[in-house]
Length: 278
Ligand code: AMP
Image 1: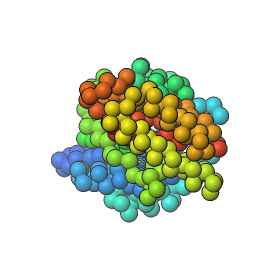
Image 2: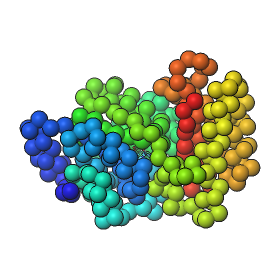
Image 3: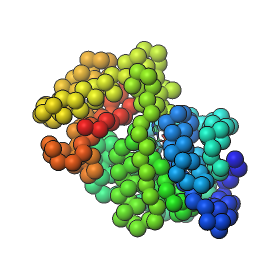
């Protein structure tokens, strides 16, 4: 696996594959590589001839006071794991390549980008949409793969690609979990031993909401139940638990298309998000 750090080197490598008629998949990451990221790599390797992974802790998607400074950074360990899983090329640009002096453009996905996560992290989705738009234009892949773990992010990226006519297929990959149900996340490293024991309650609670709503329970009543269940389990704060339409993330209409239960809750200094299908 080669590591490139400039857009010119990246394009030279990808152009050679394209010239030979081969397909290219893109897996964007911020590092802290775990089995969730590796599931995206495996899905890319299964579908496409070549897999490009990217490693870039994107400052534009962190708000003031968030964990940009302390986010796990271990390029050597990450690149070893990505290479072992079949990544052909790693793009690990410095910030000066992604946002050189004078950089001024942001991509905003209105509506979808300002609800749920967007209501608590106002610049988050425009930071994500901006960096993903850049990565898609830099690599010009046939497909880009994103985890359902970050379900709203997946929908925001799909909306952006549709709106901007970006010629790429966006593929969602199911969430990889620990045996006790906790979704793998680079941020799980922040959890203390005691917090780690409480954390699986998030998935368990969302699963219980999904099951109850499937059985006919009133979504809003189950959202309120879930918030108090999470607080009783030891979470210190619940930003939201929401039963939503699985495509628009707008209000869920019982029996009309797929639904999704999404939540964000705080455990010590860690904010966990998760979601399940209805
Ligand atoms: P991140 O490095 O956290 O920005 O994540 C990079 C990609 O990996 C995103 O598309 C995430 O949705 C995906 N991802 C993160 N955790 C998981 C997981 N537990 N299962 C599946 N995909 C994941």
